[in-house]
Length: 297
Image 1 (cartoon, rainbow, N blue to C red):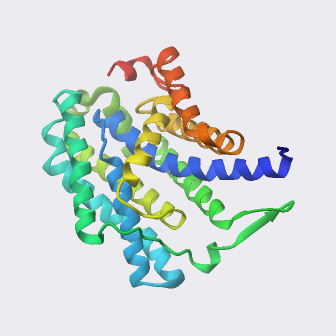
Image 2 (cartoon, one colour):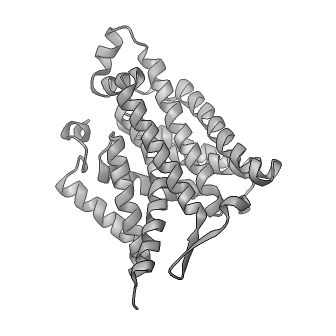
Image 3 (cartoon, helix red, strand yellow):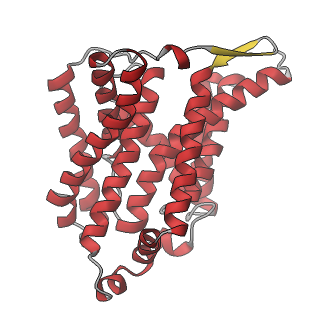
């Protein structure tokens, strides 16, 4: 089978759009670990809730307006749920060992799945794209969706905003300080508990946003949270736990590996991601952009 340059470009764009979804998810996951030290297995559940909320909102408010309203409201509702989870549950186990954190967040997966089953049932759901984003670009005889570029634009915008937040604001400096010396931040008079709540709210907002953005491209079903969270853990392992820019690098690598894996050896596309994660764990367990201290922590 021959592959011309245009087909390779189409796969590159496809991989880039997938990478941006993985980054939106993984940035929240790695942010929670980097600042709070919590391994949040339930992060995929917030992604799934965001997708289902987007479905409901686009059903109520049809057309172009409904889609944009869903992108605004769905992540907001998700982050409010995330805030309640942090206040009522997670802040009680910050000083506990990681195993207890994993058990709690893993239990939340089943809780949220049952809630979704009660509200939306078990039938597959589909979110329609607005006409303005539902077309195709043609490049040397190959077509690919306009929505790919929308996803890439959202991911790039979020990456830029995160960079500005973490590097150019007082809040970002507090986050970086808390990741390194949370006790010292508390001694300086800052409310570390409140800071952690804001971090978790921001992380779950990113999860809800990624669910709302991906909703028009997939069929919504129970279990979609576990599918994405596995890939996200691979991304943060490759990039480095607790490192936002590692999450971006890991997502870009994972997106392209999967896209070109589908093109050349479709049956084993996912296997290449796991092989990459295994190599990183063996030779650089703290990730490509992580620090040894983060791996030990």
